[in-house]
Image 1: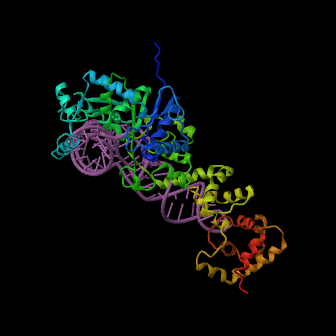
Image 2: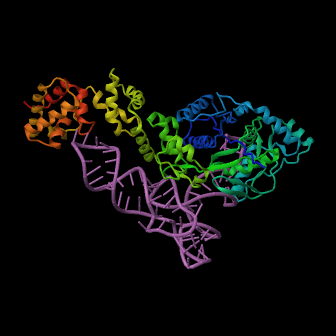
Image 3: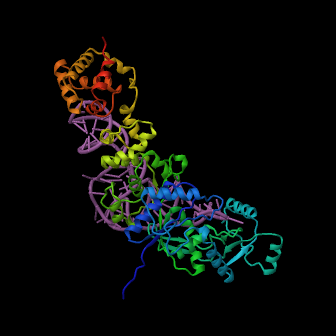
Length: 483
RNA sequence: GGCCCCUUCGUCUAGUGGUUAGGACUCAGGACUUUCAUUCCUGCAACAGGGGUUCGAAUCCCCUAGGGGUCACCA
């Protein structure tokens, strides 16, 4: 006998009600990595049953953010597939068909209870320590009673008759999870406006799209028994579940806007690299068996395993993300890095040199000082600023020192001995100045740096001199020579 | 409040009965160096608490505490 294992099919199913959030991005990443690891299929589905909040713009921005992260999908909006449509709003007929089936089989029923009444009862139940479950008032209405209610103009919702037994499922990361009987009531599967609710639609979609593994956030664990009840009522085969832990903020509460930047889009704008973000996020609640942390997409795909996903939530650490981003910036080749930096330089209104080689030289000079691409602006300011003012008054004291003045004089004199200011010429010049003045080390270099750039810190001085050119160097130095 | 899940350095984590409890970020110190940065080295720092089980528990069991999630005509 040969055991045929079904090819893996996973889905990421965002609701288009805002930007792609870091937490959702992590879910998308794990889904995608798992699909690639298993040589399976990744599906993207848009869960837009919340008509109030869903927008086309959100959908577009989410798609764009996913692509920016480097995640693609084999089936879904804009790419199609054999199991569509991939937007819930386009699948209403399918839900209706199955709802009628449940209704005729007596597995679901119409409910005419007033929402605010129910809500009041719910609050009271919670307050008095009881289970806030639906009381079953409309469970057994006669056709006569229903007609009467309808005549009063009441619009019913449809509830699922919730079975009176416990639910257990095997979770790929949590292990066995059991929910005792009697804690859940007949929940709403179709709203008064005919739109299905999440816990209902999600099951039908997952089945229709032949999803084998449901990989999603921890916050859905408590929803799972409701969904299991739907699988059961519809007679559907259940998928495998994998609930990955939440991402928390610094204060250990669920990551949200109060914790700062939480949208993928924001990280893109700040100059994070998608590879770094993917790498960092995949390391939240998961680790490589090797202990390595800088992992290529290739390795992520090869090594990923739900068995190594931790069961506890992880605090998002922006500092470590920045460090990791810096690692990636330092590792990419200078031509690509330059391409990536150009938009940031433009935004800063810097006038960039026509000469590509020169631009790359500048970027190379600050590559190791960057953690995010945005840092290129501050790091290269010295090359693009019109006016190089002293950073602070204390520096002028350095420039007035007697030894400094000797150095500056000597520099101007030495510049007459060569035509072109190159890094090498600058280095040789400084060496000669050292011999001529007897000044060495920091006392020799620092005054030149300050006179040349107005600052104590910055890129390699010979590089600065070369890019400035002889004329500008001499002019800058002369500014600080006291007659 | 009920139910579900979780608990190793400040943070991310390794660890599946016997380890000096390892690594990474951060921080501190040092080396390199014309500055900053990079890089390298060193250091600080953890098994939530209490009971068991066992010759032996971070690892297994129970209780307590703490945290998170969820109980919607949101997803």
